[in-house]
Length: 93
Image (cartoon, rainbow, N blue to C red; front, side, top):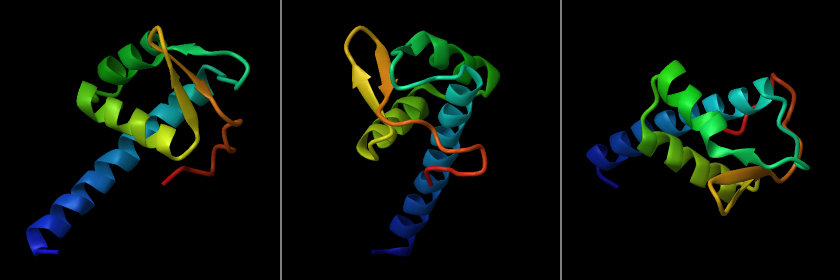
């Protein structure tokens, strides 16, 4: 791997961690639980407006959280938690 590729990977990892953690924090604030699907607008709008995130960053973080088994992306612009969120001190990095 070249230095440029390594730098790009590290930058993407940092962005992914920041965006995915912002999603997790927001899901905590709205008290998301596995039994109740969440409308994407409930998280997308606050993340874009309140956190200043970009749509691509948010979508990539959602796909990453799904690959980690944290959430499941459903039809009709919804998601659900696959398992309860960890306590506030734990992260999915």
